[in-house]
Image (cartoon, rainbow, N blue to C red; front, side, top):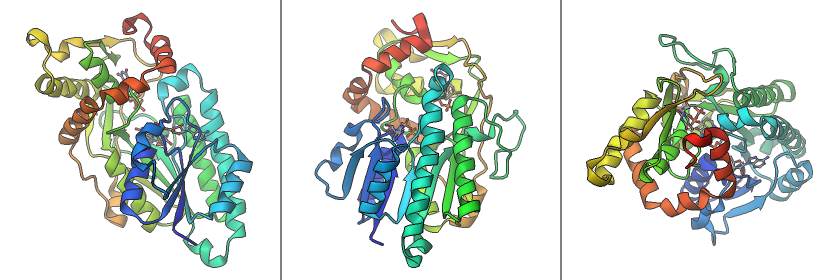
Length: 359
Ligand code: NAD
Ligand code: TYD
């Protein structure tokens, strides 16, 4: 098999970071299948515009004919499935797209992959991999003193998003157990870094703060997430793909449990230094506690000892330092943010936050 991989969802936040890293670190060709929903943005990949090793195809992972055609044309040695609807709040307002892409889409992608896998030579079957990118949210919520999620933690998804990802994980696992498809699953914690759509906590707070807009923190702001720098996540995926044990799941975390209020206060402190407000006003004065998200999980924490012990992976970035770098990136790329904050996104702000921030 030639060194060709098929990436799905490669125009989204994590996918585009992965594609950029992959092209700069390997010699092979990458076929990028993305539907370009509101979350997909080809500007993220502008640096690859004239690079013949990046083949972009606009399309849906649920489009069986298209996926079959791509697999037979390119004969990839691996498929890395990032494509998903990924925002919890959107899944609360409208779960249908989550069922379409995360459940049906993954199912159809698996079916096409199964047929493709059966068609390649025995030698190629030995090296082929299907890696499914998933989330820690499938494990549900932890109490303050509970041990962190391991790969053996029971699935207990709370939101429609988490439930749809859990369903996709089960399908992937079943295709390994039933059909022998050489799958891998990675379940990671909250990512942050360049190119994240400004509906998620960190880019939303940066984008609002620089405009002097309210910073909407849900509930009491004491919910805990474990923050993972996107570049570290991409290196974990590459390692799992090359050296992970077939059929296994690997948890990937940043070792950085932090409450939402701490995250937002850190962003405000860094912005006070980088871009002071008029008359010495503090960015933190923009923080506003608002009505909680329905079913809001209290705490996520990842035990990443399996991937550390088996594959030697650990996060290379410290949250406080990489958060500063991320903020500097967004300040340099405000035109990217503005370009993203258009049409559909504005409607979304009004639906989710109503009058509270949609000024
Ligand atoms: P994202 O929403 O930024 O990007 C998703 C991408 O998938 C977009 O480019 C979109 O156009 C594409 N897409 C959506 N539906 C599609 C379909 N039917 N066919 C083809 N393409 C489609 O998401 P992200 O934050 O980059 O997340 C990538 C993956 O990582 C997802 O599977 C998500 O569940 C998982 N994950 C994300 C995080 C996080 O913190 N962002 C944490 C854990 C797991
Ligand atoms: P988010 O970035 O949506 O990721 P997830 O829900 O997948 O963890 O949210 C991260 C945390 O920040 C989560 O506890 C919800 C909270 N949050 C707010 O307090 N305000 C906001 O406006 C958003 C988008 C999130």
